Length: 190
Image (cartoon, rainbow, N blue to C red; front, side):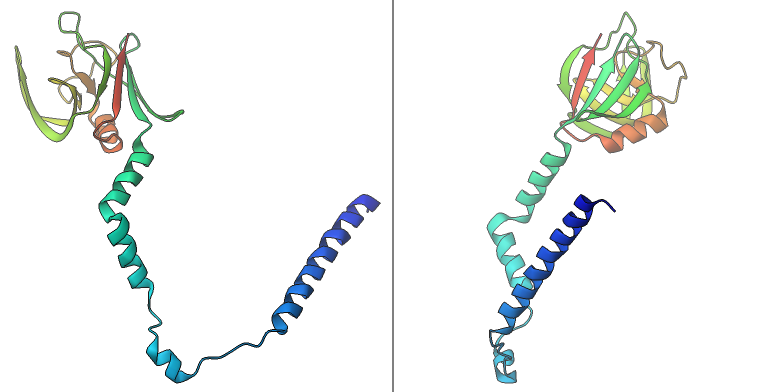
């Protein structure tokens, strides 16, 4: 074994042994007092609930969870690329999902810009000029009547065929619906 490795091992272990010996000698020089049974009866051994109650009263349970939720979900965003007909779900710099979508036709385009998810509906009825579809699954509205939702009535994803909404396969919409929260940023770009 090379000399420098041997010296570093001996040096570290020697220092560790000396430190442990010093601590043990110091602790051994102080007398330890064992409390009597009468002293134990006066003090409750379970004081943790009091501390927890004081913490809740001081900071509040809702305030803590709001702060935690905000910190955890603030960097989620959905990017919709109209030219590639793809939806990307990002959390920070990490790509979480990438789905093929169907956006608005040329006559009824999907609005471009930066939006936020305003409301989420597990099932929703969608009506407009020329269509009335009940039970549209996993709808997330981001601008007026425009939403990201599942589409069970067609299978032409990757082609613009909708009336302005962003259509996904139903199982993809379910995943995105569970991942996204109210206020998640939606960026629609060409």
